[in-house]
Length: 533
Image 1 (tube, one colour):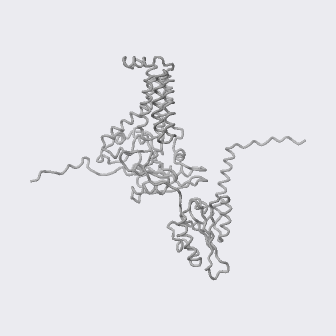
Image 2: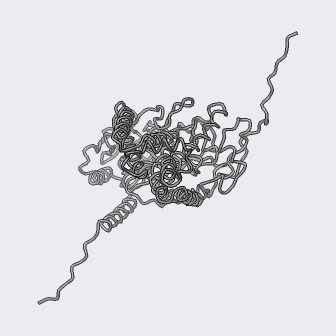
Image 3: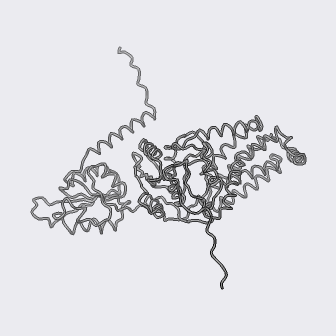
């Protein structure tokens, strides 16, 4: 009998995926090594094998019966995906000129003398040819040409520029980004008409080949921030990139921190303002949300509308947002801690009211708060997922019905309903949705700490939270700037909205190349006037 052979260990799904990724990389390198064959029939056979079972792949053959002094009649072909190209542009600017001119007069110069489309690019290998076809281009090749020509003829479905839905404003520009990269970069360049505005493009994703563009003002951006971003983008090894949120997670400094470290926005004016301060805008094709790098904590408490009104009101609103942020984070926790451990902090008349309201409630304050907070989150999530006309009605009516029923049933006290409702409303005042989600998430551990150790536990948790936030870096910039480390010059501009005559400098914690924003008098000029003689 033969020796017993130990069976090989079965591969895990992760090992199989890694092996497939290596094979894909080898295939990509192999395609780069394959050049463009001089004969169109060979290139057509290669592409038909690659796009096998792709029903929208079209090989439009071209014959030139007017060719002279040629033992073999030259042939040509146009390769494209039927659902991605504009048929009118393809017919009028590519196919028709090719057939009318014939091959003799333009062999080797087809892109200069024949094709009348605006955007052309020579292609010298099979991999680039495939990328151009899948990106919505038509690739042209004629016999005896050592290369092919990619003609940009996209007909990708897009929506028009409209008002952003995630960032509503009372006053300000109504234009918002779309899913089309060219539209988004155009909206930015329309507002920054300077050659100093630079842009670089990189493709991410082995299969999706998603185009990512990052823009910056060369004489304002810090080179360390720019080099770090380039390095992190080039190191991304991904199969498919669909949304800027995926890219945000891949390039941010601390993945496991709950706090957002990169600012996302749908508003071109906000991006332009960030670029003018020395930030970098990262635009992902296919999503209307643009990333601004670097971003500090106080950026998430500011809105574009702050600068479109007289400075008195936005200054008060900014202070209000800081208060509502702390309220959304600590409201239920303080109620649980005070009612459980520190009743002496409550005035006697109010204490008697709270005690009378809690008579008959079978749960301690922590369980009471958890029930109401979870119910509120369920109603809020249901309102988001339902159709808009129904969602708002469900959120409002559901909260009223559930809260009233819980109070009448003796499960929840009236005071707890008021605290949870006020906390939920306070979270809506935070301009950045991702920061509002952080307060909703951290609210639950804060309540547990408050129920265990009271206000002392809340103090410890806040100190730990502050240490964590001060330790964060976003592309080398401290997350809690300008407070920690201290930049006293920037304190006032972060807490208040100053008049235009006092906004003379850019934030010195973002860049140090050009801090001077404008040179105007500190006091506005006096109005000219007088009496008529």
